[in-house]
Length: 396
Image (cartoon, rainbow, N blue to C red; front, side, top):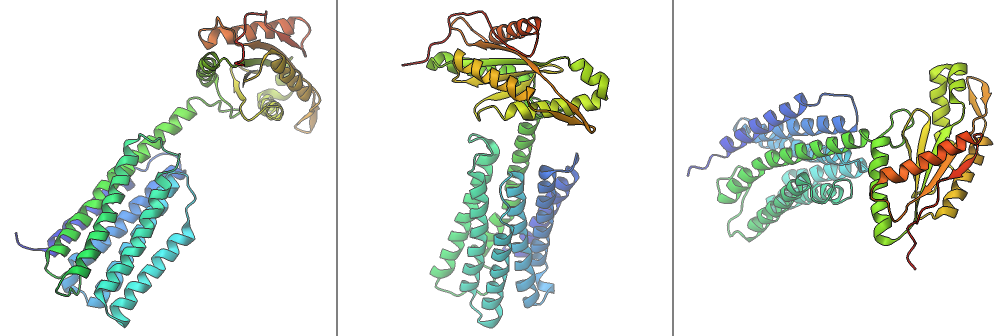
């Protein structure tokens, strides 16, 4: 087949530019980390398209322009892609390292291209810079942000593995060939295959990036659907799911599980006094007070207007009662200041523990809720335990 490095480069430039345009056009929604990462990735593709365009037009450019400009575009696009991927994954950007890799990579290429011309050393130097960028991307992907079985993670790791293999193959070919090469535009099979496969990488990497973008958006939507927007704690759906999971764990490993159902006393008077905005501030402050008494493994959620649930894995009835009393006392002695006025708030608490007869979380929560109403009927600002049932015994 005829060797046309210009044709391959032009196709890669158009393909990469089109993908950059698609990514940029698809970045709708509220500004945020995920959207910014997609914009940076699309800008990186645009820069990469300029690099391919420079190679396609090499016959009309000075060799120095192709050497300095083409490699600058390539290394800049590599660095921007690393930043975009790490931003999307919520990892530290390593911006200074990425910048240093790009600068020293370009300076090395310039040195071995202009000062001490050596094409093999120049390719090796540029390959090392690209390899470091690949490692920075892989480092972010092997973290815990994305679930291990994700398609996006598999696609991107495969692309980076292919890119690394391509770099190794090209350098080995250059050092083992009996005839010297003087540039990427030289008509030989090594350059042809390198340009062909390199031109496919933006397509595969773009698909992987879009899959990753979609997976992270789905994760965020999943979390938002289980978050109370006012207080930032779990909502009723999340609490129901967590109760079921914790109850299954409790039954399987015969470990206790404690539940606290809390309700702010006389909260209507707070709304009447400060309005609903003031009441919202009181609820947020109440959550902060409760959290100071909890362990890291405890989970708090809002299941009603001023009603909250605390799940305390590993807590037996005595421990759950102690936690409930600690919460009640902390809230009572923590004055709140709303619009310059002091507010004293109390809570009533119902306590229940997982029983061997519990098959789902609803019955456990219902017992805690019944204990809460018993506490309110008994005068409020107190702790009441649910009627004793056969609890899950801890393993010996």
